[in-house]
Image (tube, rainbow, N blue to C red; front, side, top):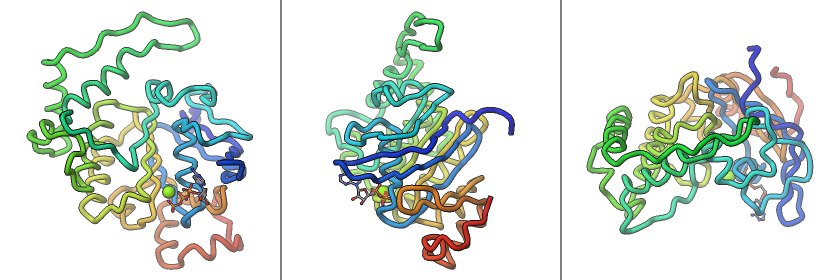
Length: 267
Ligand SMILES: Nc1ncnc2c1ncn2[C@@H]1O[C@H](COP(=O)(O)OP(=O)(O)OP(=O)(O)O)[C@@H](O)[C@H]1O
Ligand SMILES: [Mg+2]
């Protein structure tokens, strides 16, 4: 592949409350690719995801994060989102009184009215989407994801099961059309149905215009989502990368052989 990956993480060092968690992590994700990031508890996977999205508690002490060729280190979380980075929330907030549809329309409008900063100044802001147009778009996306239309009228995350929260997230991703999506699934206690929701959703949305980084503990999910690359993170950096077969190897051998660093031979 000759094109430059949209997301480039180079020798990234991140500290949380003065403690270094990421210790020189490098990773590249291009549109059209699905990457899986695995690794033992506490290795820093969520720290990477939160840092990519600009969580203020994570202090970048070294290295760089480039998105579409530009450093995003100085960008706030909402700017990153408008630029085309998407993060699936691990702990979505319930908002009684706000329907899924209205939430999604606000989210979409926030993305649409972005000023384009492409180096040549700021283009005029686009207007938000009209209600009727939005309803048609939503209907189409829900059909694509095989979701029941009544879902859109429910209050956001209010009494949602784990799987339904995942559905709301995937729907949000479908509408926002990010260029790179980061999905941190580790702590959300996904059951097999929710795993399916995530993987079916990712498969439905995957294509040349979307790059995905799926953070997961479950080799199982990789039976449904076929990653192009699998990376294993140990102690704040990628210790081994490989093709889909690496996930299977982890399933049978666990993490110890990676941790010991004896067989870090995969390309
Ligand atoms: N906000 C924080 N405050 C203090 N320590 C933190 C914070 N975020 C992460 N850490 C520490 O950083 C280390 C890495 O945590 P992180 O959540 O990134 O790991 P992880 O790979 O996502 O683990 P898991 O597989 O359990 O989700 C841990 O030692 C954790 O305690
Ligand atoms: Mg985590």
